[in-house]
Image 1 (tube, helix red, strand yellow):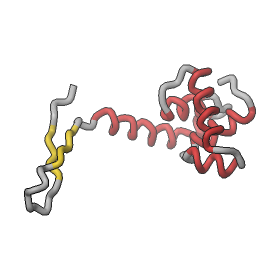
Image 2: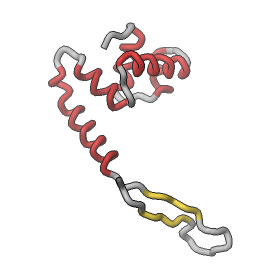
Image 3: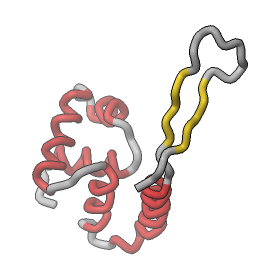
Image 4: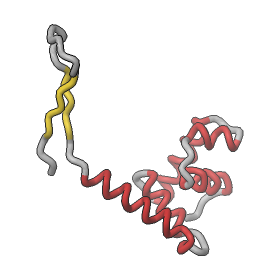
Length: 110
């Protein structure tokens, strides 16, 4: 990853799980500035999401083996996200007097 000093710091903090607002507070910059740097990081490295950013950051370190536990947690999270079934939630009509205001309909997963 060929990044500027600020982009590297932001990549590190995002990889550690900080939100854009938390990163902005830590670096004393605007959250919009952090979002712009994140966009540049994604664009420069052809990344699609934060999981890709975390993976690339860890693999760019000198000793990525010390991040093995973090990589395993990331893999479990990615598996959970991609294996979830899609659900649609529809609001019932207002005239129904039930405690359950939402009904969940399971849809086919692709």
